[in-house]
Length: 619
Image (cartoon, rainbow, N blue to C red):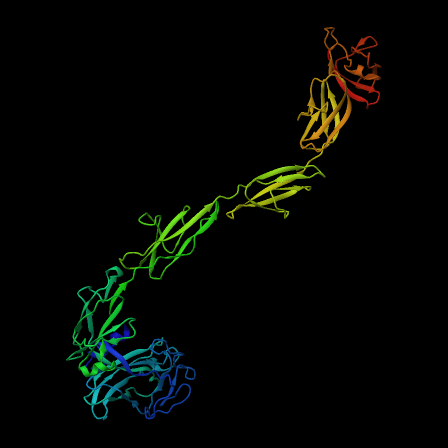
């Protein structure tokens, strides 16, 4: 925008700058383009000597690098020209201002308007130099002379271009008309600046190209420069009109051109009017018109200008999207994306039916919410044309085997069987075994993977724990009850006859006698037994002659061949003793009633450990 504003200023600033300006119409191909990529200048182009590296006053170089030897300059050239490569670097002569560049430009068409343009840059950096006020600005005059170097066709001055903190290129242009019978002009550049600290410049991309009217191609069929036609409506014919703006040419000659790719253009024979009617168009075509002041100049792109292209775009109906494949998953797995591929300029829409149906998603990928078949169709993006055929893509969800988790008990030294869920499965056990069942002899955690015919799997687990085997620690009698105590914790069953087992270790209302206690684990791994005497020992006596609990005597002692009972007070004094079969004590000692308190007994039965305990005497 800065360059444009500056050039507008130059166009209206008076005689000194009256000829600077860009071609107001359309431009042809460049007939000359000096981008300094060769690294040399033709002999006689400049009177300045050439050097390597940064040039001093009155010298030049051709390079893509600056500011290496002269620290006052910017350290680089910005990449904003057309070629972004080498440039002509000129350090203006501090004694002799004037002509520093002369170049003959051949190959011009006669009586044709041209635009000369070039990029200029002040390469002095005010941040790096000690020059006062940012240094002396650059100022260049451009002149275009005829081939005889006697007639000035055009000229213009850039005005002062001051140094800037950030380097930038500025493009300048000059329009002129070649003379009849002449195909060559001479370009001259003059240094208008004074010598001293500054006035150092770079030049790049010197270009000559034809300048013509800005010609617009229109059609009544559309307000723009593109006619969109959906493929079912093709073929179509279009009438085009070329309208030049008369900004450059006084007279106009036309030649219509056609292209299939907007790059390679061919003349349409006989189409030299400003109006052209196309034949029936089946595929996309591009049209433009070549314009010159004289028909003789239409034969060369260097001597004419062309309009912007007008496109007749036949929008093809998309093909059916290409499926990325049907998807199969197992129940419980995350739903995958259904995928189709299309051209980049096509939009995919998914439906739940082969025709009609409900739109469920857009885009090339789609994650369905349920199993089923979904249908993808493609339409050209940005056009109101019918979509192509639909492509079905199916998601199947197969049931997975139902896992189970079991806890089993193992009898030490004996195998136990682990059974997986029956069915049409492939079984893979953690032990490496296959088959529905395995036998194990060691406790631990086992697992089996079940896989059905659809490839769906589940894992069942088995926790196998060794059984705690029963051991009897003690069998006690409490009144008429028998209590069997084990030596270790576990899940056990208890019995007094080896046939009838119960989960409780307490047996009630058991008559006195000799019994065998049985204990076994729930798995039946081991049963242990122990013979014991069961005596019904009273817990208290009340010698009040009411017929109930009047004396201490044993029930069941008659089952034993030999027994003896002894009674003691709390101090260990023997109060009574006798055979168990006939023993009875009513709380008297030497005919005297003993007080209410606890008394101790010892019972001796042949073949068994002594039984000790205490009871209460209550009066």
